Amino acid sequence: MRFKEFLGNRKAVETVRGLVAGDRVPGALLFAGPDGVGKKTLALMLAQALNCARQDADGNACGECPACRKGEAMIAAAREDLERRRDSKDAQRRVEGLVYFDLQLIEPLSKFILIEQIRQLRSTAYTRPFEQPRRIFIVDEAQTIHWQAVDLLLKVLEEPPETTTLILITSNASSLRPTIRSRCLRVPFLPVEDELIRSLIAREGRVTKAQQELATRVAAGSVAAARAFDAAEYERRRRPWMGFLESVNRPRSGTRKEPDWDSLFDSSKALTEKRDEFDETLRIGYLMLRDLELVCEHGKSAAVANVDILPHLVAWAEPLGLRGIARLKEGLDEAYRLQIRNVNQQLGLESLALDLLGPPPVHAG
Ligand SMILES: [Zn+2]
Image 1 (cartoon, rainbow, N blue to C red):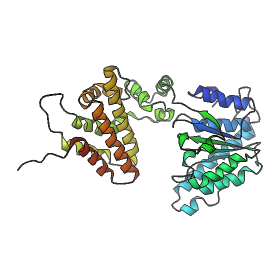
Image 2: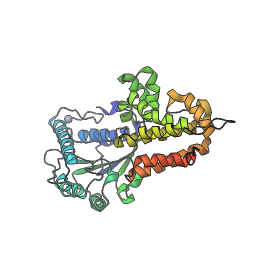
Image 3: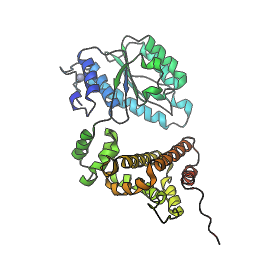
Image 4: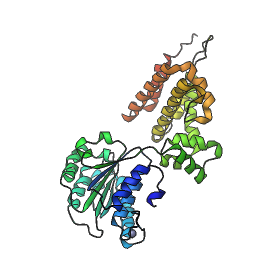
C-alpha cells in the first residue's frame, strides 16, 4: 500500500511520510490511538519505506527491490514465530531461543510482552543490522510490556542505538510510563471518520444496503471492526440485550407490571453461553446503553449506533431515564470486573439484574 492509499488519519500518515521522504526518522516513535485504525499497518509501511532501495519521491517503498522483499519475509517469519510461541503451553519454551531480524515485530506472548523479549531487543539493538540498512523494531501493544521489562526498554531509549529505530504502538498511551512517552516522537491516531468507514463498507459489499449504516456506526471509527462486521452475528449477540432491556423496562405510568424474571435470566444465560464471546457481548451492551443515553438527551434524532432498532431504544429510554441508564451501566461495570477476575459470569449478570430490580417477587402458595 502507498501512503496516499491509507484510509483515514491523514495527519498521522503525512507526518510519517514526511519523516521518511525527508530522511528525518528519529530513533523512537510512539504510534498512539484507538484499536483498528491501522497503526501497525502504517508502522510496517514506514519500516519498509525506510529500508527500500528505490523509494519514490513520496517516500513509498517500491515493494520489489531485494530490501523490500527481505523485509516482507522477515515480517512473515516474525508473525509465524509469534503464533507458534503463543500456542506453546510451556512458559519457559515460549521465550526460548528468541532471534530478532533486522525488521522485527514484537507482540505480547501471553498477557504481557515479557522481559526476555525486551532483553533480546536490547541486546540486538546495539548490533549492526545484518541485511538491511536499518534495524527496525515494531513493538505492538506496548502498554502490555511487563513492568519488570520497562526499565530495560527505558535504557535503550536513553542511549538510542545508532542504526536502530523503535516504533512503539499502543491503544492506551496513558498507561505507558511518562519517561517512555517523552523519549518517543508521538504520532497520534484518531478514530476514522464515519464517512470513510461508510464508503469502505459500501465498496466491500459484504453487508446488505439496509445494514450498512448499522455496520458503520457499530464500527465506531475502526477500520478493522468495519471489515470484520458480521450483521447476523451482531444481531445474535444483541438479541439477549434486547430481551434484557425489554424485561427491565417498566410501563410508562399507571399499571406497574412485575418485571419478567424468567426472560431476564434466560437472556443472561444466552449472554454468557461462551466465555470468549463475553467481551464482545459486553461491548454491545455498553453500546446499547450509550444509545439509550443519547436517545434520552436528543430523542429520536439521536445519532445512535443501533440505528436499526431506534424505535425500541426510544421506548426503553424514556421510562429508564438517565438515572436508570446510569444504574444499568454501573451494573455492567460490575459484571465486567467480575469477568476480569474470572469469576462466574452468570453470577455477575444475575446480581446485576437483582441490583436493578430488587429481589424477585415471592409467590404465595
Ligand atoms: Zn524497495
